[in-house]
Length: 411
Image 1 (cartoon, one colour):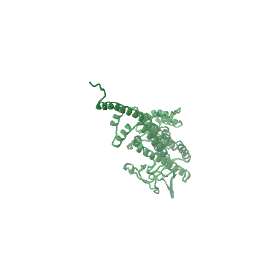
Image 2: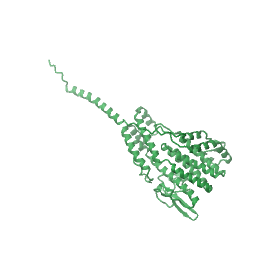
Image 3: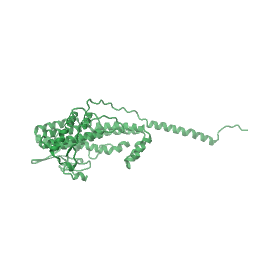
Image 4: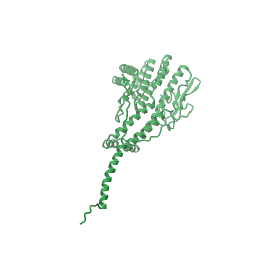
């Protein structure tokens, strides 16, 4: 009888497969763990100022009185005409809120950040309401004949917008710009009634605010940290937690594909691509605005592919905000001196001085606008029909042509 115990060929093959498959699985698990093993992120530990204007502004919102009888801080277009006496009463009802905002404006502001994927910012909506209150106060004081206080309230709204961008994400910068625009419009409405001392005081304050402006590059540093933290948060979550959000989210076409790429891209690779992109982006936003948008780098990671249109619009909006502020400061200077001041530059015109054309007793002060071409002071008309129909404030978008002319399609 044979005692040969050797395995048959088929048996040896089965044994090899039995060893190979677990080995491949273990190797795959190890490789996957390595690809998703993102180095720890050291989040900055900023000491919050005490007191923090952020907290004082939240108190101011609790003191806000939005409506009194027929008067409202933010009336609809069909309720713009409100009795002056009722508006005066609403203004008086907001004395404490106004005083608290002004207290906050004397304090340092720092936006609290957890960098959590689910962090939200209810304070930004509150701060915009406070800016509207300041605009209401400015217009009411102007109608009461107190033009110096009207200018102060309008400039307070601008100061609020400059302040709240500090230390926060992009949404904070954009809300700050919106608050500045609210204040600029109110100041433009009363500037022709201001006496020389008030004009000088207002201009000095606006000049000082420009020195306090939080750079867009610093905001992008915050966005960089937030996206890095998000990548790490996603690496710690189960598919069962994330897929329902993608399925239920308001994703369409390309965005759904980008969301799936965010989910399945190895997190170490995603973090590295994200780091390299933000390094280029932060350098780019420090450069003068370019109409073709080529100054912003193309993303190499899915998160920032999704955000690129937001970044491009923010880059334009920030340049436009500085342009309109310079136009307003230049107008006030012209009221005081009668001559243009070359220190007021045009962010849309490669930071060259704003354009000035004099025609007898009248003048045209303008920026070359988002297309970067000097059209001789021809005010651009937005392609967006709703904006084009406005008599004033026909604000231009990034792809519009024509110049940005002080008092016509600004403020």
